[in-house]
Image (cartoon, rainbow, N blue to C red; front, side, top):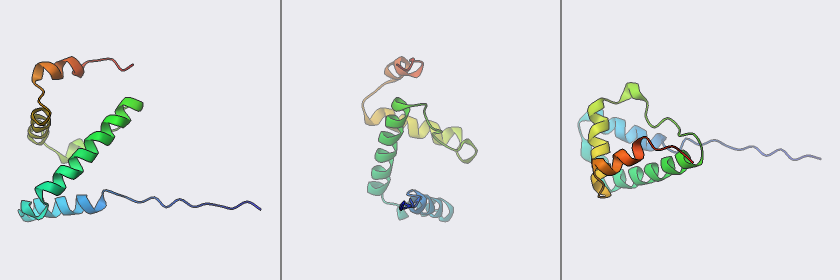
Length: 98
């Protein structure tokens, strides 16, 4: 007799997305601590990079929900956080995937 296994799909980002949306809509940006934001950003960056290196990169953002300013502010902070500069980034920007 075959045993069926059901896998429950859980949306692991729902709580954070709800907290971020609430912080942005209410203007209470401190309702998501800097430490929690750092944890989420670090995990998201690491997972995205691993997926992008292993396969075709997944969509990184829903473009209709962010502004160019949102992207540039975030990317600039990420570049500074690891001590890169724009020349370093340009070396990676158009690299071919192995």
